[in-house]
Length: 79
Image 1: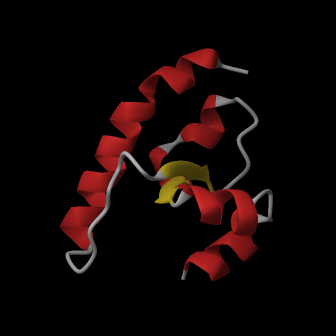
Image 2: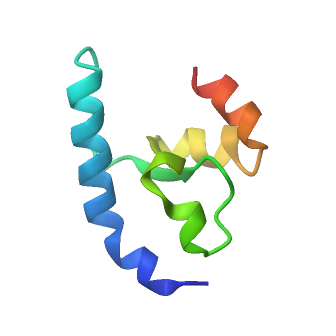
């Protein structure tokens, strides 16, 4: 796994939070509470860490609902 990807966790949360605030002004996001979810499973490769593959979700949603489901199921759940 590419461990350098983990170092950017705070930056990625900030970018995703600001993007969401700009495009969805009807929600409030606490980036310190949220976790980063890879829509396509993270294999530790940079390809799975593109911003377009990442979203912020609650820790509970990430651990209990999304888990390692296929990307199509994750998108259905998140919509």
